[in-house]
Amino acid sequence: MAGKQHHVAIFTTASLPWMTGTAVNPLFRAAYLAKVGDWEVTLVVPWLSKGDQILVYPNKMKFSSPTEQEVYVRRWLEERIGVLPRFDIKFYPGKFSAEKRSILPVGDISQTISDDKADIAVLEEPEHLTWYHHGQRWKTKFQKVIGVVHTNYLEYVKREKNGYISAFILKHINSWVTDIYCHKVIRLSAATQDVPRSVICNVHGVNPKFIEIGKLKHQKLCQREQAFFKGAYYIGKMVWSKGYTELLHLLHQHQMELSGLKMELYGSGEDSDEVKASAERLSLDIRVYPGRDHGDSIFHDYKVFINPSTTDVVCTTTAEALAMGKIVICANHPSNEFFKRFPNCHMYNNEKEFVRLTMKALGEEPIPLSDELRHELSWEAATERFVRVADIAPIVSVRQKAASSQHFMRISQEELQRNMEEASAFFHNTISGIETARCVFGAIPNTLQPDEQQCKELGWNLQG
Image 1: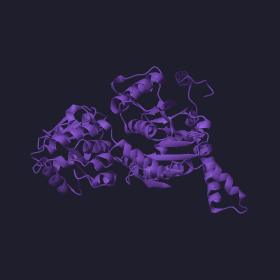
Image 2: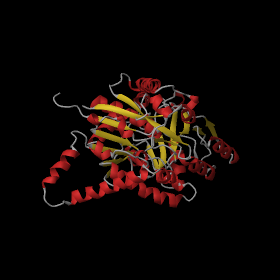
Image 3: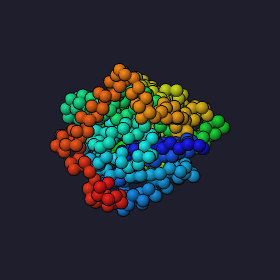
Image 4: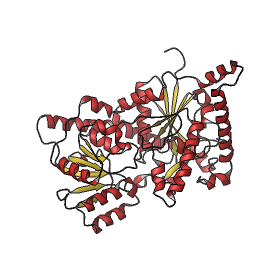
């Protein structure tokens, strides 16, 4: 192909083996963009020193070098999609914030990509990646910057002490940083905060193995064989905000009406002991097990997936359950809008409907999924949606557009807006370079530059 091949750099806030959405979904996005597009793709993920690895990665997993972790990530992906398309993986220095339960970047992570490859940047969790960003402005370095909002931060913050005040402040900060650093923002659902230049589109898919499980169940249902032998379950990180509060409330308030329901919960997290204790105290007919991979064979025979969580943006486990051919019971909430088209997804508006739909689901068989709907859940379809809404094929050079506008004698509205935006970005860059100000707003101390240890682990010289 004539001409330069455009480069897509996908920056994200987590990496395997941390089984969180911002580790898994950007990895699949990188693989499928490399598979279907005419792009050179690089996935940029955080590198944690061993002290933080112990806090974040399951089963005390540790890596001595980024190369070792990259081997693990690629092996994990290959086991799920087969032969890997060609894409690069790079690491930036990160530190784990115990308070935020998340990884924050250290230094100017845009430097991970060389200037000659700075075509398209995809910021997975753009607000998270730019709260404390200090260095070259993303829009200056890259021709196009696309944000993908994964997390309903405001909903989580509201549940904390003085939550509504914190949420009010955070809402304005999120709007500010995404405005000055992103050309366009994709919100996975309307459950997320509205930010400038944003569109709503679910650009995530499910691991192909869930679709394969669903096809086998489909065959059994079409042959009028029994495909499911177990009742209802829920899987999710075991923290109260992930739907466990709502679930235990519903089961407790309607024990009599739900007398035929034997619920099984799978999850690990900081609230595991409290969830178990509450279930026992309320004398609920549920069993609680440690978390495990949703694709594990233990889940194949469950017929009904009950997910009352409303803090997710688009729930990955709901999509996986539908792909596996199960009936899903979930709240009628903006985070579940994408699933309304699926006949096996039953949404309730109140507790009475929850009881009715749950008991109905236990007594019926799922409707076999059509090929069209199965495709909608796939990463192929998600990638098609992403390319369309991100408008990255072909890309438009922002630098060229900026240069051409200078032929006009008067200042256009667009140029005035751009000047104001640059002033705003300059202000953010100034504030984010002051250590005291960074700490006041929740940054980890001494994260303006990576320390000597991280530079050594990443194979960088001390100047980065």
